[in-house]
Structures are given as C-alpha cells and as structure tokens.
Figure 1 (cartoon, chains in turn yellow, blue):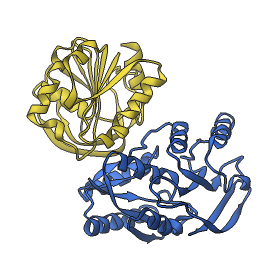
Figure 2 (cartoon, rainbow over the protein chains, first blue to last red):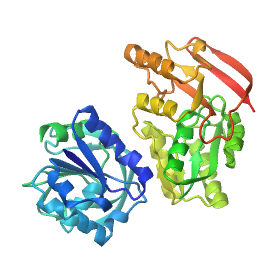
Figure 3 (spheres, helix red, strand yellow):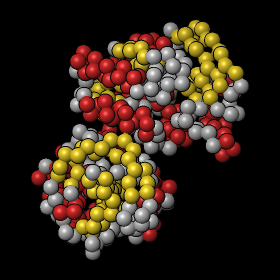
Figure 4 (cartoon, chains in turn blue, red):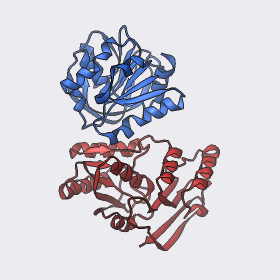
Amino acid sequence: MILIISTCNEKLHELEFVKPIENIIKNNKLKYKSVNYKKLLKNEIDKADKIIITGTSLKDNDFIYKNNIKKFEFIKYFNKPILGICAGMHLIGLVYQGKLENIKQIGPIDIEFTDNFLGIEKNSKHQVYSLHGLCIDFTKINVFNVLSYVSCPQAIKHNSKEIYGVLFHPEVKNKKIIEYFLKFL
Amino acid sequence: MKLGLLFSGGKDSTYAAYLAKKKKHKINCLISIHSENKDSYMFHTPSIKQTKVQSNVMDIPLIIIKTKGIKEIELKDLEKAIKIAKEKYKIQGIVTGAVASVYQAARIQKICDKLELECFNPLWQKDQIELLEELIKAKFNIIITGVAAYPLNEKWLGRKIDTNFIKDVKNLKEKYKINPAGEGGEFESFVINCPLFKRKLKIIDKKITGEKNNWKMDLKVE
C-alpha cells in the first residue's frame, strides 16, 4: 500500500496537491491511502510499502512549525522508499537538521540532472513546474546527494537509503518520476 | 476563508466555486475579466457579459474589469481586479477553475503571491472525463457556447453536457485527440443552472457566428 501524507492545512488544497497524485496511483492500479499529517497514525506508517509526502500552497507553511516537524521523525527510521514533493522535500531536510531559506520559484523552469534519478537519465534536461517560496540547501547535509540544482537543490537522494526529494511538482509535469517511484523501487 | 472567484460563467470556474463552498469557504465576490481579444491566452468565453445575470442568481457581487487582451498587459488588468476584490470585499484568497494550463496557473499564482493572497485551484490536473461526470452528478446544467477544433461544428452549439455528450467527446478524444472537457480551448461553456443558483436562467436571445470548425454562440439570459 502506498501512503500519501498530505501537508495541506486547508482541505480545499488537497484537491490540488493530493488528488493528482492519487490519480497517478489509481491509473497504475495500485492501492493507496491518503492521510493528512495532523491525523497520521503510527500503524499507517507501519503498514505502508512506500510513502509520498505531498506539497502544499505557497502561503501554507504550517508544516514547518516545530511540533509539526516532529510528526515526520519517522522519515529517519522508515526503511522503505519515501518521495518528498516540495513541502515534502523540505520536511525530509528539516528532520535531518537542514535550514530553510526563502527562495521563490513559480512556473516552469529548465533543470538538468547530474545523475540517474527515478527513471530520469544522467545529464538529461527537463522542464519542471515550480511552486515554492522556501528551500533547504541539501549540499550542507552530508547524507544527501544533490542531483539537480537551479538556484537551490531541485532533486535529492539519501546516500544510503531510498529517500528521494523533488522541489518541483512532478504530478503536474514529469508524472513519470512518480510512476517510476511506484513501479520500480 | 473569504474568497474571490475568477469567474467566466463557464463550467470550470462555477464548479470550482461549488467545491470551495462544499469545503466551508465563503465566496465574497466574483471577478470577471472581459477581454476584447477573442484569442486571449488568459480570458475567453463567448457569453461573458452574462456573468452579471449569473452573479445576481448566486447573490454574490461581481467585479468586472475590461482588458484589451494584450499578452502580459491583461495580467496587469487581472491584478487590478484582484486588488479591488481584496480591498472592497476583504478576500483572503482566490479560487480559479484552472485545470491544466501551466501558463494560466503560474501567472495567477504570481499575482496572488504579490498581493499576499491564498490561491486555490480545486480542479488542478483533474481527469477531464471525471470532471464532466462530476458536473452531471452535482446537477449542473451547462450548455456549449463555443467550439474551436476539427471536426466540431455549429451543431455542437447549445448542446447540454449530459451522458450523451460525454459519450461523443470520448469518441472525439480517441479519434482526434480532442480534450473532452475543452481544456485546450476546444469548447466554451455556460452554466444555465447549478446548486449555487437561486433559479434556472432563461435564454432570451442567441446569436451564432463562425465558420468551418470555429463557432460561437452569444447568449442573452435573464
């Protein structure tokens, strides 16, 4: 079962940031469960085969408050694949003591991958859809490799665990990244 | 949250308002941009002048801003309209009916960010057949008011979005790659009735113009 953890403070935003990911999973005929991080239970994490942590709106930064970050400590101990998207990637960085910076990118940007990443080939260029006002400099967290960088890290991978993060929104452009995560890890 | 709706009178923006209300938000005002450019990248709908009548039956005030529809300058006009909505109706966010256009979505996100407003896009990336089915289930009465793609013709004007319509557009999708809900500009629509309206609108006049695969129907409703 794929567990989707929503980082949205407003239910209405889940139609925008969670539902498109659910549709990709449904189209791939896989089972999933979606839960908001505020209602996340330990047994839901234990039952999950893979976890996707979603993004949220530009103005919604509730997830960064200290008590909320604590809810994501499982990232360090979950030994199965995790994909963090935008806010989800920030949360991966925050549990590894990364520091948030204000860097805003809105709309399509062109990025290049320096190594293979979730089905994307090394040295290939792609246009991605960005919607963020924050970022974490993962180059300062030694357990992560940064595989794409434009103004800030765009794609990261843990150097020994299957923890992946993308700052952009692959559910909008580059759905194949999510499909690769679902099918081949 | 008090929200303003970017409103064209068509199915997507009206359904976005319906979803926002279902999640307990309040639509404080409608914002309509009347573009003089029929090929505008941002705003287009043949019956947009009738949004005033729709706002009356929804009992929600309407802000109308006219734009010449020149690329990028029309965004300044949109920003002006949203700014008026924020000041006059104290809105905290904007709702849009954006489904797939990254061009439109990114520009509205930038305006909302500049004006410190939330931006809700509840139809974002939605499957177009699923969207049409939901509209029927939610008892939306919608008619087609514009077509712009081969092999669509004037016979599609005035058609109601119902199960037969879905069957036909599914065939068109397979044969001609037409977006079933018209996200690529293939269809324009107008909402005649829906759960947000106090009563059904009555069409009192219509004017059909066009040629080949590009037709529009200007409506007058009351």
